[in-house]
Length: 332
Image (tube, rainbow, N blue to C red; front, side):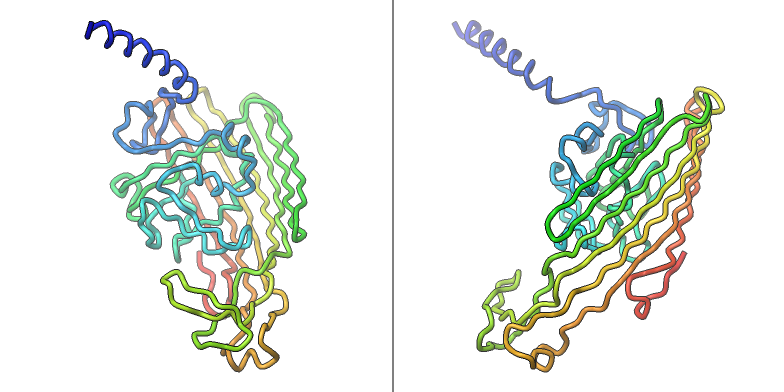
């Protein structure tokens, strides 16, 4: 009787697994955990994979929006597309330069604070994203204390054109164009352009530690009582990204890729608003936030030899504008 019950339970469990297997692909190939291609099932590390099909289903505008589906990963975007402090937190490690973010093997973290301009990575170009959770400094250097996000772009197998136009509240616009094709049997190319713009919304209230008549009461994230006496206005955003890439195939196993990406954005605030009168500046100290901007050119060259199992990657990043230039100078 006992064997009969156990046998019936195992049959039911096997039938349920047939359903689960439709949702989980166990033979997904990943490279982030070991720097060489292996089956996901054979890796000892904690790795999650987001494919281009997943990205299309989620209808995302910025690549970091996809991480809401990945446990243990958080990217703050408190100002919508106008967020500049896109610090990536993995497994609770909220430290600068603790998560290495790579695009085709080239690290794209800001050298100053480890942030990533996620909006400068066109979603249409992404083949898959591999998220490696846990220390990986042995393979990827000191910036991989908490983990690695490895972004792998698509190979060109046919000519394709992808055009997106969108308009939303607060005059929010997101337009993109991606063109990829073959110039010859051995030479692939891709061109992309993306524009993101918004009039924004109020993101930065001005708080007072002392009770003020007519102010709205609130609390900080530590529970301390504060009074909202106004705001800095709506945070406005304007960003443009242009990219071009070429890939030459010497044979089936050897290739050389050249890529260039230019990203520029600027932000500002509309007129500040006072809730308690015109003398708000005297009571709050300051009510204004300076406008900012950032601009960079990135150059990448990748030689891949899959037959002999090695890859050479060279990247150069020229960051020639950095937020408020009175605070910090741009550096290479």
